[in-house]
Image 1 (spheres, rainbow, N blue to C red):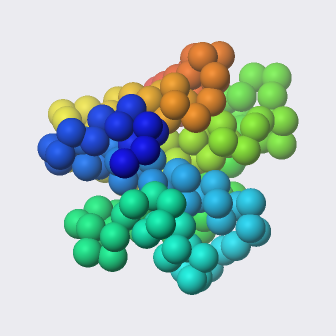
Image 2: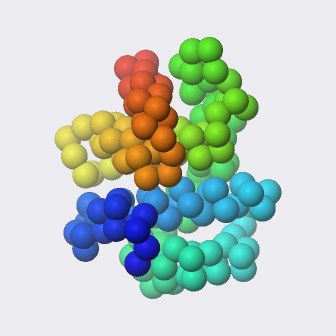
Length: 156
């Protein structure tokens, strides 16, 4: 297990498992974007999941990870249309790759992927995005991502 998975709360609980799955999905999205991959999963994706992210084919979170990667990729234009007006002086192109992916992932969860983790699933999505920014980005990005996704939550 790597430090990123542990830092995201892989405690063995459903909540910890979902946090680990979110982290794996984000990291796979990042890998696919670097490789300019889209569409069906490739052997590289399978290797990334198994070898680098320690997500085995029989992992119960595997369907969630695959669905989230596929749906975030397929919804990029729509997500960017929701996110862009909330950037205030920034554009999607100016954001770092990881911040852009965290925003898209969080926006997808807010708009399309209700979770049963809490009474307020949109707040869970925002909190999860902030957790990902804490691990993979900067303190400034945490505040920025919180503001953008909170604005999205408020707007819908």
